[in-house]
Length: 391
Image: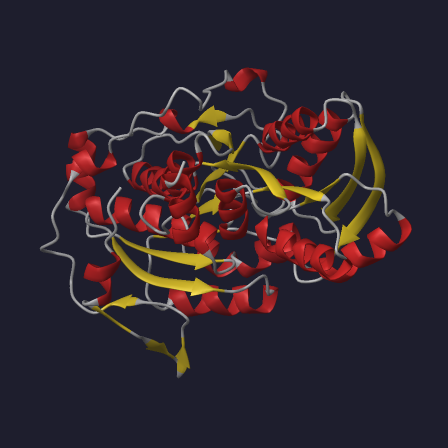
């Protein structure tokens, strides 16, 4: 899982479209001489602690209720890779937020695209702003991509924002969420939705909470108060699994912004000082929870979804409130999306709803879990590595 960032940086320039600077990178040189590397698209074997469930048994469904397929079902042969390499295709990635998690998705896509001689003409960041997403779509269309990668927030607004791409026949691959009513082939150039077992991801974390508090405990849950399918479903999976345990759901508090959790947690503690554990939707909200606990001098435990820098260090060093995280094959998510797009360009069928595996991270598997999730995009924090090496 090597990185191509240094090579890309040396051959890229900022591009301007209609006088507007994209928060993007544009390839300055042609990819005509780029190597075609089918071997770089082979799937790496997974450790035994990552389970490959029968997708037919999972509760999670796609954008319009599609049954899930495994990421292993999105496979491209060396001969097909060679065919793609001759087409001189172009792609754009409309990122929805910055950070190690999303950077790993982008890097996975970049590495796979490079292996197929596909030029990545732009990477933008609309930062959850629907107006900016619409602007980014219009801007990247001037670069004439063959397909676009993106993740959505609002099913209705996303559909409108992507209409210029649909009208131009540009293929669309969606991560996590898709426009309302869209599925593979509807519209004709929508390729697939890539995700993971969202409900199972939440359930994994709930089981870790139950392990830590086998005699029961009081839980405070901060949930994302938005129509955001992937987060809503993993929170539901967490709640459903907690209901099977002796953990009491003492309070649920809505979060409209991941930057608001310090105040939310402070208010939660003012009314529920006897909590044993707090659920945070992902790593950024967890940082706000930590700040509130520190201000209150509280030692309440924290569990959250997605591998975060703070949580990794606290778990590795046995220091701090975060004791459990659950995550997914984030880097492989991006690679799979690129392969799906290439297959579509060859006229090959792609499953409408594709999942990568999920897993929990603890001290025993933390280093391997981190590397599997993020590839070479982000290293496990140095402090965490130091603590693990001292064991």
